[in-house]
Amino acid sequence: MGLEKRVKAADRTLDLFEAFQKAGRPMSLSEIALAMDIPVSSCHGLVNTLVSRGYLGPVGGPRSYYPSRLLYELGRNLLARDPVLSKVTPILEVLRDKCGETVVLGRRLDKYVQYVHVLEAAKTIRYTASVSDLRSLHSSALGKALLGALPEERRAALVQTLDYERVTPNTVPNAKRLLADVAAGEARGWHMTQGESVVDVAAVAKWVLLGGEPHAVAIAGPLNRMAPLMEKHARLLTAANTEMAAATS
Image 1 (cartoon, rainbow, N blue to C red):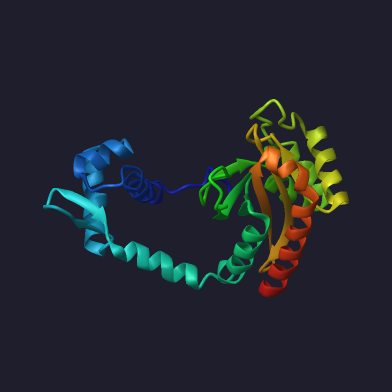
Image 2: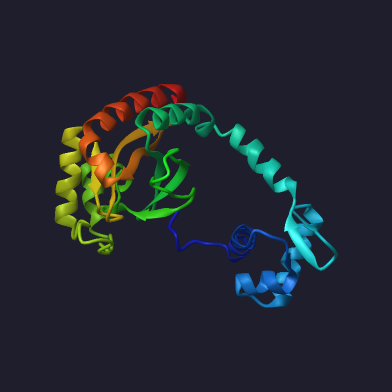
């Protein structure tokens, strides 16, 4: 589904919970409305609905609200039953521990990569990201890998529609260069970026079918640490992808 096909009510509900995540504390109705940049009257109806459904509750008095544990329980139960994540998460955890860098699972959403799962490395200096983050296909290793998963005709058509924002001086600048880069990655067996999305970050990625749908997995970390070990990381990634594909087939 394209990013332009959105439902306003759903957006507002998610905006509300993200506002609480950012604030990290209970908020009053006026504070919630301000954080969401909507009228207090509109916010009042949304808050009342969520309170009646048990997803928000008064905290420290009737004028302040905070999400309830119900939201956590819902998310935890859904995640535990996810037909893909429940099977691949243990494999991704082992991969992260073996390579010592952050591991990201992503899938394509229109012209972007959407992060589905992020397992950060334990190191103090590491690549950090969040689930649901979006990255452009042309500037990320995951994006290149997902383009590599497409038939050549579809790939060629899609790359002509991308914006080619110059995220860093090293970002691939046009469709011709991107197609060549993706073809080289497919021939090599894995894709990479070196300072193309973040100047001092490198990543190696490879696509895999999970539950019959194309996904991609990347190992990402500081450029100076990643660069000498790209082939080693690619071997670890290949082994993990093979295990995940078997676990979800």
